[in-house]
Image (cartoon, rainbow, N blue to C red; front, side, top):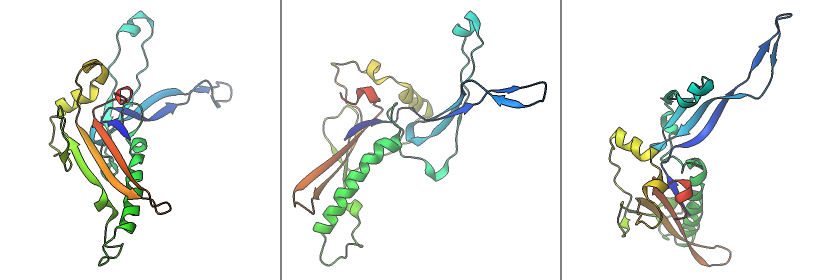
Length: 210
C-alpha cells in the first residue's frame, strides 16, 4: 500500500438551513436546499482548521472580487493525527492499512516467540521495521526520519503546493517517504508473506500512481 500525506484534505462540512418566518402566525418553516456554511480541513501534522464559506456579493463585481475565507485552527488536544490525507482521502481512512501490519505482526509474534518470554511480554509492534527515504535520495535509511520543527511559512507553502504542477511527468520526482515493513506467516497455510506500507510526504491523490 502506498499513498500521499500532508495535503490539506476536507474532512467535514457544516450546513445551515433556511428559515422562512410567516408574518401571520409567526411560525418558522424550513425550505430549499441547506447552504454550505463551514468546511473542516486537516492539514500537515493532522491540524484541523474550520473555514467559513463566504457568500458571494452577486453581480459581476462579486465574481471577480472574492473575500479571503476566514480560517481558524481548532484545538483538538491529543486527538490530533500524525498526518493529513492526500487531498481527497482523509488520513484516518488511508492509515487503516496500518492494521494490515499489525495483523501480520501478531501472527509473527505467535509463531516466532522466544520460549523464555510469554506472548504478553513481546510487543507485536517490535516486529514492524521502519525506514525512510530522504527527499531526492534513492536509498532507504533504517529508522524513522528526524522530525524537525519546520518554519510555519515553509510548511504552508508545502501544504498549498500542487504536486502535478511542481513536478510534471518525466521529471525525477523523489519526495520524502516513510516505509513500514514486516514479515508474517499464515497460521492456517504456513505460507510466509510480507507487508509494505509507504507514506509519501506532500504527494496528492492523483499523483500517487506515479
